[in-house]
Image (cartoon, rainbow, N blue to C red):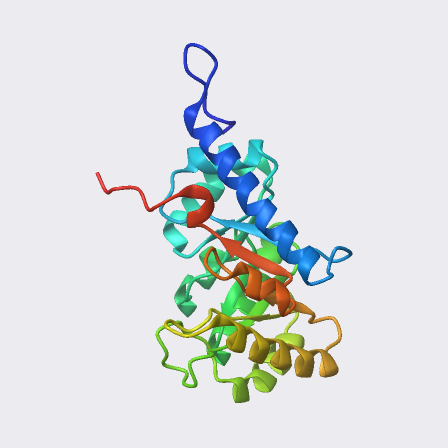
Length: 248
């Protein structure tokens, strides 16, 4: 699927809307990067396209976006199949059930929500099967860490104390690549403290696994704080795509 056709006058109002919103977000990122003195290592922008149509993803690709995020397997699989010719990198960012691993590894470049050992086992098995069936690169895996002080927090994730065991399992699983850590700032609290804690967890992880340097953090409302504390991947949705479309 290429970018949707424009109207009679060659003008696509949705494309123009996305172009303006994307430019505004990039300005915010650029300012945050400059403020943090990180011009030499700017973060990767992942546009979270959940609930939005495949046509919007095609428009984003036409605007230069290469990485998109989804949190529901059925929706992500459908979009990835329809947009295969665009060669986008698909990031699975939602909580993932082990029985969905086989489907997710068929299209995902990375999974940002690895938070328990059985999921590592399921992903490793699924990747091995997919690599035997057809070429695919190793799956990048981020350990999702709960910053709510409990592993049952509303934002999901493993306890910080469980990170070493998850890292060891990921690092020892052929077909999986330990990329780093991911977190969502707890609701109702300042994100700075949360992202500082995540940066400390990341530093400890890198001490054991130097290649696991990625930090997936920062959304529309807190990207500046995430950049300040070292985020390498930003997951931005509503400030680019707008509110969730009304169900029809």
